[in-house]
Length: 395
Ligand code: HEM
Image 1 (cartoon, rainbow, N blue to C red):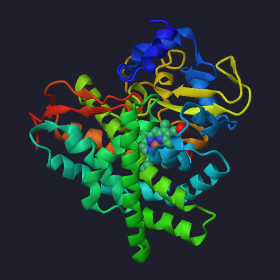
Image 2: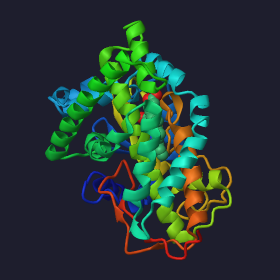
Image 3: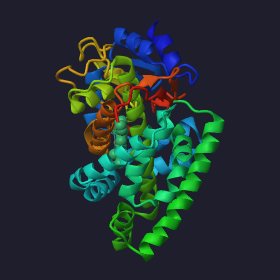
Image 4: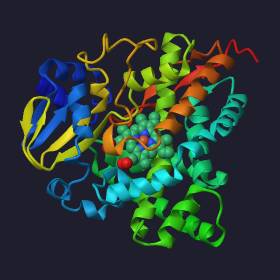
């Protein structure tokens, strides 16, 4: 496959959820390829890491969005991500990130270990002898954890799978008019939901993140505007489970393929993250002439950073196509790097490090029942169903 063919695959929504062959072709070509005027794909590990850590590159460029899609401001889903810390540049990013990091502390996450363990055991107890692990485990578990942390009532959990799936379509490299419409509607529904929840928490404050973030807004509007409060709450909810779901399902399918023996949970999860990254790409914009992978990129260029490709760069990883939980020096870019490094990385890792070994221990005879089905997405990569039988379970 040539680099041009690889780019065509990655831009084709029907083919791009199987990107590995295209990544290999890009690696053979070099760390960066120009796709169009001012538009590049970056696949090399060092080049992707370098752009993410370069403070002169920006996570958001309204001018380029205006060029590509003049009425994007009318799509609430795009606007929500644009208002959130994910797609904001300093100084707004620095301010929001500091505030969120202040309430989303390492202590709060570490304190969740027992809560997560209890939720995993409860989910495993309730698994049917035959069934789909996406429906029965990999969705309900991360939804349960993030809603508990945010303070979203347990009875509302059932609504979020569909809404997150619809909303996050706008994070793909390509999306259809129907995707846009559904994403917009999901954004309005989530906004309406949080408007009511914020009113409840203001009336009766609790020890949760919704109350803490609302208080940060109310204390001084300069810390967090109303639009930013809404955007970051939505981001935390959706980013909090949609990606973790994919990490769990990717890990389970790899366990089923390679034998479900996990010696070192932390190393195992890092290798799942590298081999089958739940987030395959992100984007940056240059604010000035920048050298990327040895190529001079002009100012105002759009860089698609292929995290999933970087994680399989043969210049960085020996035998990148081999799933090897024992590999040393494993440092995948699945959570990004630099100023926007994933705020939820410790939580996502903790959930996977508890869930995968618990599943393997409880059901050593876990067996696929038919083929798992890939989600039809490139960026947020996971499975829509993983049918199994628990046969051989040792209770
Ligand atoms: C396996 C699970 C996860 C993966 C693979 C993942 C991946 C990522 C990546 C790649 C970024 C950086 C995007 C960029 O640089 O443009 C990011 C940012 C972010 N993630 Fe995650 N994430 C995961 C779980 C979570 C969880 C559990 C939460 C929240 C509880 C979360 C919240 C966030 C937030 C708030 C940001 C924006 C940070 C910023 O812009 O400063 N993520 N995530």
